[in-house]
Image 1 (tube, helix red, strand yellow):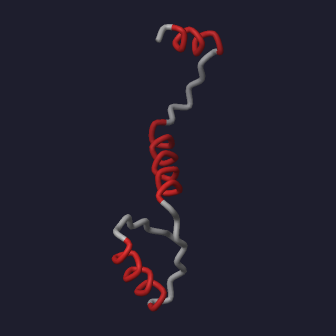
Image 2 (tube, rainbow, N blue to C red; image 1 turned 180 degrees about the horizontal axis):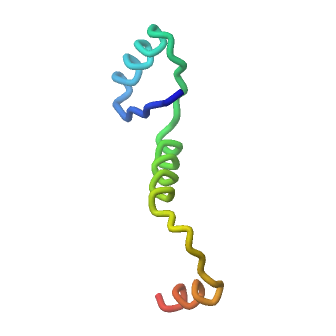
Length: 65
């Protein structure tokens, strides 16, 4: 089973929710913060390389800023 996310204004969200329920869909509402977390997770998955870095390398990079 798949899912879609639609980010719209409140009035459109109410209309889309009613339509989805009328068509027999399950509707779960999320707030703006949860939506941003989903987008961040998606972006992180796309950028994942599978490579690892040593602790020393990470702290060296952080110290150079």
